[in-house]
Length: 317
Image (cartoon, rainbow, N blue to C red; front, side, top):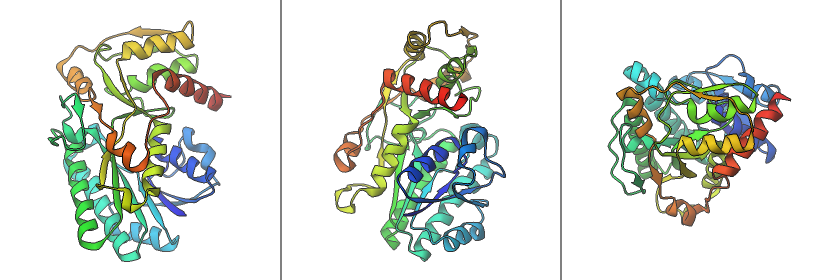
């Protein structure tokens, strides 16, 4: 397979690229960045890189044509904060970017296009706690709105033109290299920094449950979904997840595995912080994904923390 990974220098894109290479597949990274970030520096020289703007039709077409791409994994996106800060830019990157990939896939006969969607499509402020694939989508921010739009565009291209569009809705994905932003950083940071021997200060409300997905399980799901026979699939978009835990439970496990971990608290009790916390407080029913393409998570809380720590220490060494 000749794969194009959009956003391949990002947190999840880089991990996916490593797995594809380990499986003996060829990878071209498509990214607007000029240089590999530290967590993806090991990929330099191992993959082709096409620098370009996902919202630029010419850049996208040139990447697919030049490298004769078979399969696209679409990881590039503007996330919540950036989308809220600039609605038009969010539409340009998230919606127009996917539209370009769909149109190029139609013209060039790309075999599969697997895109990442989000649990934010069910509501970023307070979604239902138990969510299945039939739960009503009611996004209440620009990021979730663009992802619903992308899902519908993908389904339309599949219906009209036979483009093999597939998409997975992911909950909070954590793992080494995830950006430690103010509102969402604690979920990864409370493991990553103690694993580096550094102190970490928690800001969020630690008693609110969060739907977790370890990055390695996200990659496992993306590959299994791409390779699933069409005859097994009942739908174009599926929910996949890992487990539900509060940050208190995660911290307890971190301290069990890293005795002496320096974790302190400076809680932000604002309504905005609580709303962001509640926006991740849901549990995905993954029955359809399990039955249709065999997805089951390998990493629950204990396993996730252990592997996360091992990966951080491996990179540090």
